[in-house]
Amino acid sequence: MLTADDAGIARAASLLESGLTVAFPTETVYGLGADARNGTAVAAVYEAKGRPAFNPLIVHVAGTQQAQEYVHWSDTADLLARHFWPGPLTLVLPLREGHGLASLVTAGLPTVAIRVPAHPAARALLQAFGGPVAAPSANPSGRISPTRADHVMAGLGGKIAAVLDDGPCTVGLESTIVATDPQALLLRAGGLATEELARVLGEMPGQPEAGAITSPGQLLSHYAPGAPLRLDACAPVSGEVMLGFGRMDCDLNLSERGDLTEAATRLFDCLHQLDRTGKPIAVAPIPEHGLGRAINDRLRRAAAPR
Image 1: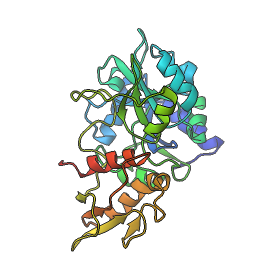
Image 2: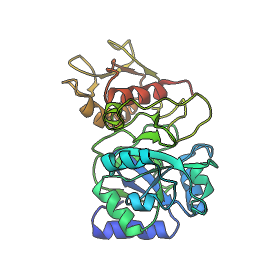
Image 3: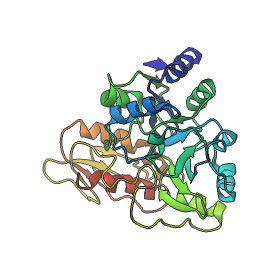
Image 4: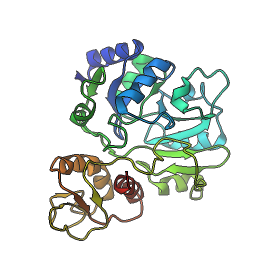
């Protein structure tokens, strides 16, 4: 466990340079990072998580200029990056020839998912490392995403080189993913509300056709606790624990005041806590607007058949 001070960040960067895996905080969730140019290091990420090799990874970079070294940039990408980078937005763009990224990062696709995180520790680590870092969420594949360092240790302790600890994540949901070539398509709802994208684009982003996985976060069953989830529950049944929203009787509440931003920040931590009870989890209805879209996306995938 490393502290996110100068010494800890330097140590984490050194481990990445050595081809090892390091979990680090972003504003969304903790990511499990490896040098995106090192196929062996990226393979260690898949191995530690038990992640299917057909599920691509997000590449984290220090800024827009570095992103453009790996992808063919577009006007839509430029518009969105100027408004939302650094931040919880991932752009999917065509790879440049001779990009140098490991093929495992993209799962063999001709595109790559790339973003510039806003978290100070993540930005300091990327600056110290000086290269692209492939980083899915730092948890066993398909399980609840980590928003605290202790979540990472509980799921991956002993399987990775280090965890850079800088407290809880402020957004608490994975990044929103948008394909930007040739038009904006929403591939995954996330920590940037769709309405914010629409405000900048002048219209709501389109929806992709159903089919093959084209970006991270598209598996039907994902973000799941060990126990079953029952959604849109008004009250628990016998043997269940209750995750509430708004004023109601429950075991844990995402937001008593019905604040979707607070609910997004607390979602994964609450699921971790309730999962430790070993009991099925009932979840109150969440409004389907703003960050509620991303919260419901995660809950539906968590409740999907496994």
